Amino acid sequence: MANDTNKFQAIISHCKEYGFIFPSSEIYDGLQAVYDYGQMGAELKKNIKDYWWKSMTQLSDENIVGIDAAIFMHPTTWKASGHVDNFNDPMIDNKDSNKRYRVDHLIEGFADTLATDGKEKESNELITSMEALIAKDDFAGLKKLIEENKIKCAVSGTCNWTDIRQFNLMFSTEFGSTVSADDEDNKVYLRPETAQGIFVNFLNVQKTGRMKIPFGIAQIGKAFRNEIVARQFIFRMREFEQMEMQFFIRPGTQKEWYEKWKATRLEWHKSLGMPSQKYRYHDHVKLAHYADAACDIEFEFPIGFKELEGIHSRTDFDLKQHQEYSKKKMQYFDNDVDPATGKPFGNYIPYVIETSIGLDRMFLAVISQAYTEEDLSTEDKKDDRVVLKFPAKLAPIKMAVLPLTKKDGLPEIAEKIIAECKPHFRCFYEEKDSIGKRYRRMDALGTPFCVTVDHQSKEDNTVTIRFRDSMEQERVPLNRLKEIILEAIV
Image (cartoon, rainbow, N blue to C red; front, side, top):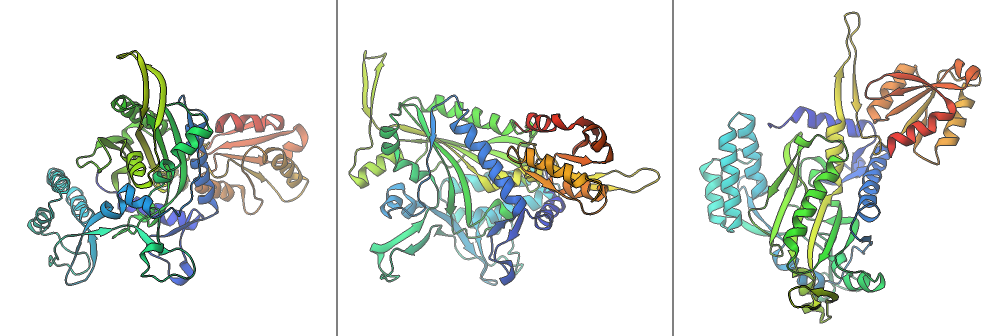
């Protein structure tokens, strides 16, 4: 699919106008690739988090518990994990503009342009060549690929490139109040991933929870990466949030569990009602140093198919590394009997299957799929609307209560409805403007149900409920209202 740039820009504008996402520090001209979630965005983000957390720790058939680890960790953690030495991206600078690019982003951007121009075959061949060169760390080959395709700098318009070199993505700072920036012993990092907080707590959780393998540990938390080129709105940011689960298993069973979690995670995405054709698997050509298998679940954003969630078979790399660097045993004693030997499996370092989803990317996927422009014009009247067709369970506001007038006791009835329902789901009250304008505002916020209180409500205790997607209206008894909405948002 070619990029739908117009839709993407419309979504960005809509997010700003309706209180979903603001540029951070905007009154000071902002900070590149850093965003704040507004009043509507914070609600949507929390609902996505809650849905993921509940599915992992409460509804899963597997034994999974959650933790919340600190952002700051002992700096040796990142030596053990390989981030100090290996957490790099190849970068290249244009000599005329001094603008720096991440190599894969530069090539992918050019490939997107080819696809937009109808050259799908050339675009695919370019990406395939790039992935093969990255897998071999062939920087000279990557530069040659850029030069042969005459890929230009967006600023200078020239192909005058430096050699490609590595760039470490971790932010560092000093720990304590009396140290200098040159004191390496006091250097700490803002975590580039949340996974290590789970690994260093593996024994704490296993022993205190009396956890039996296989089991998982889930976490939602902030991570930070000093991206060379952060771009595409909230798709790639320097401060972001991850929803990760590390599943600890017996060595030798990783292939089975890897395939199971691939299928399980895809089904979770589909449970939100997103079309199946919007998703696809993408197997990694170059595996990370810790993995023996890895794939992405990609989603078709308006900017094309992009990574949404990663599933990785991390082997025993992380626990083994932490055992070596900390000198603490990271082993599990398995009492289960091995059918091959008739003896207990005994001590071993568990293998790990990881599922890792970017919360901000999930937010972008949900709002991209929800954003809809509809032409409602008739022969007699031109009309249209912008509506966010969120799954009801994720919508920031579940129900808006709209008294037809500001008098005659209608606001009092509306307030009673709010008082009864707000302990159970998020409600919104509005009495300003015509009912039509209020409906349109609620459509633009993605509110699935609008309840209108009118003069008939005083006579027979009924209200009109309007359904966002179909715009159909139904007269229902007041005493059934809460039940109707609760059934829809489960």
